[in-house]
Amino acid sequence: MNAVIGHGWVTLLYKELLRFWKVSFQTIAAPILTALLYLLIFSHVLEGRVSVYDGRVTYSEFLVPGLVMMSVLQNSFANSSSSLIQSKITGNLIFVLLPPLSALDLFAAYVLGAMVRGIVVGAGVFAVTLFFAPTLLAMPHPLWALAFALLGSAILAILGLLAGMTADKFDQLAAFQNFIIVPLTFLSGVFYSIHSLPPFWQALSHGNPFFYMIDGFRYGFFGVSDISPAVSLAIVAAAAVAVGALTLKLLATGWKLRT
Amino acid sequence: MYAVEVIDVARRFGPVQALAGIDLAVGEGEFFGLLGPNGAGKTTLISILAGLTRADRGSARILGHDVIADFRAARRNLGVVPQELVFDPFFSVRETLEFQAGYFGLRNQRAWIDEILHHLDLTSKANANMRSLSGGMKRRVLVGQALVHKPPVIVLDEPTAGVDVELRQSLWGFIRKLNRDGHTIILTTHYLEEAEALCGRIAMLKAGRVVALDSTQNLLSRFAGITCRLVADRVPASWRARVVREDGGIFHIGLESYGELEQLLASLRAESIAIVELAIEETDLEQVFLKIMRNPETVVSA
Image 1: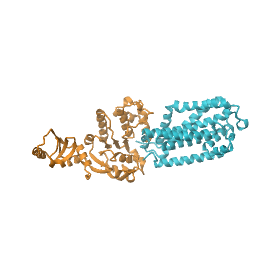
Image 2 (image 1 turned 90 degrees about the horizontal axis):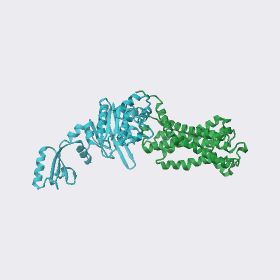
Image 3 (image 1 turned 60 degrees about the horizontal axis):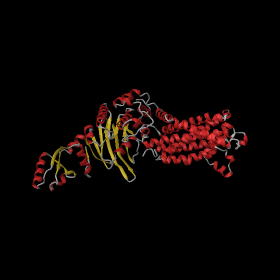
Image 4 (image 1 turned 180 degrees about the vertical axis):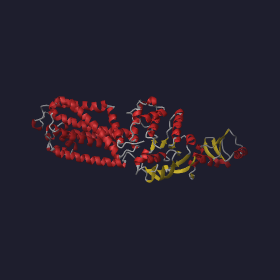
């Protein structure tokens, strides 16, 4: 039989997409609703009380891109990590370890699948929150926003893959998610501009890689950001290359997947 | 060229030497049995062939393709039915098989997948979710997944564990047909009568070593003889060493020939041991297996 070059990883990508699509209430609708609730509650409490970018932007307008990016990041991570840990724990990972799929094949399929989930949820959040901030549709730099969304989702998809490989139990993965990913996203300026923070916390925020993703993403909507978008893009791209190279190397050695 | 060639393969897991230097060669078209008690290293050996586990030393080849250096060709030529009853609960039987074909780079396999479903008696379950299947059906899907890329070499790791008699028969019918069609079959099983009936050649593993490797016929005839199953309160002192197995008051005594039976009876009479029950059994693979496994020195090879 004639094998079609590249069809192996494409099939795995398709399987990854179908996996979350089959439970889309949980994987797409639920995170969209969560983001919408954040928007309703925080804008109700803070609208008119918080000044962002010297009053040029309302709080709702400021919050929406943050929520979109947070959803992109968290769902990209959730997809690759949960897919891998479920396959590891139920043992069906063997189905992708037996075929002639290379480390790059596995990497591409899991990461792209997770990126699609992140971007789809992010687009959904944007669609439903746009009602509260319709001016956002006239974004001045959509390509910047897209670049940060893609790179951010790639980084989190890769981190999810890494976490899924590392964890031996759901408990360990949940710890990774709840104690690392969630605090880093929440404290990256989703809900506030870091200029509103005391200097110490502002400086600390600069050490949070997620800050650059969200700040750069916002630049696409407002043409204003805390940090130059080119600098943020360079930092985010470098982070993507670093975690990507590490994960590919671990996959190639079969670390934690092949004994 | 050999279907499977294993050269000096060793693997240690922490304190456990799972494989202590294995050499094996299985010819194309063979029906080969890999037997041994739990922990003998059978699954480790299979995992090394499949690229799931790496050997500490030595090499393994599938139809001449090294399982590490030339892993794509090696894996394309190998189908593995894993021991664990694993499945992906998100998908249906047909999706499971289509994905598996796709992972091997194969497109448009509907006709072949229909044929597999038919042979494994799964046609009516094609669109059922994997979760809804019985254990035996899940086992058959695993067999289907191993065959979906038409591998010339098929390894079955205890495929009939926990499978009912009827299904076992139909599964073996199908595997036999694959073997007749030219597929090389390597089988591990705990049902020794299955191995005896199916396998042309057998390797027995013990503590990570090959302790017997010969044709099934030779193994049986080498240990030919009969076993006397005796129920009594003791065995004559001169026959103590001949007891191959003892459970409670049941003694299995190995005899070279029927002539020896007379001597045994004479000894029993001489020592006034009352026979509660006595039966004669021909040697089967199970007895050969037990003899080889109990004797630490035995190494049998062709």
